[in-house]
Length: 108
Image (spheres, rainbow, N blue to C red):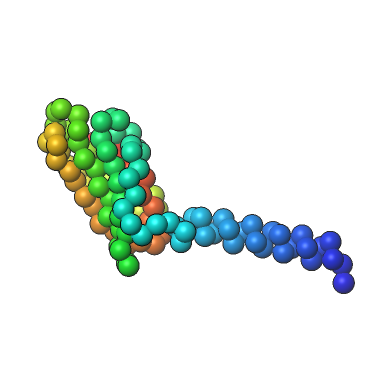
């Protein structure tokens, strides 16, 4: 038995498994994640996400002092619809947990 080759395969398999867990979101928290600002929305837009058993919800709150057109951005699928959001108001968009990943909010 070639121990160097077997050890190399084991390390490669473990690295692939770690990468897969990272992409699947299996290690992410179930509670609400306050993410600050993601996407191309101005920094005065606060974004967060929360996860349930089968769905996750993205949220963007407009704190910019004026109305903005915003949408929730998701990786691996369609984004939320473009909505006019008044100052101090929020939009939400709910999708299935897998394979979607919350990417924040963007202007539209």
